[in-house]
Length: 99
Image 1 (spheres, rainbow, N blue to C red):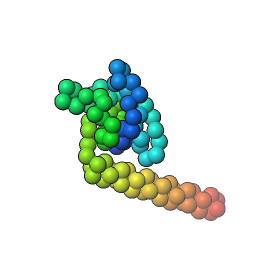
Image 2 (image 1 turned 45 degrees about the horizontal axis):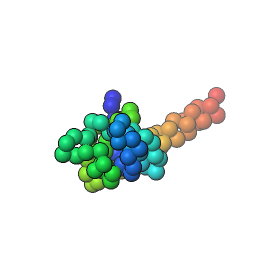
Image 3 (image 1 turned 135 degrees about the vertical axis):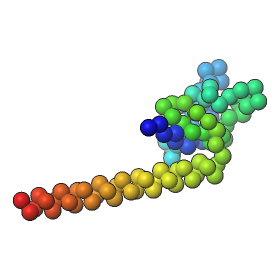
Image 4 (image 1 turned 120 degrees about the horizontal axis):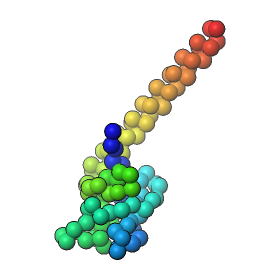
């Protein structure tokens, strides 16, 4: 399954190589923005854009509302996974105590 994570472009690190710094949930990393630039939207105009990041590439631009909704869903999924993990650990502890 492919998953794009929303991030905000905060700096252009190499206009020639089409590289930018994106911030995703407080984590910054360098990504390639070649897929989202063209004559109508050049490299220098990307600062402030919200993008879907997948394996180090900005795959598409999205609006801030869509970015926030996606981040909220990802957060809820993380909480659900943590809850399932806690339930499995509790079941394993009960089964271990019963042995």
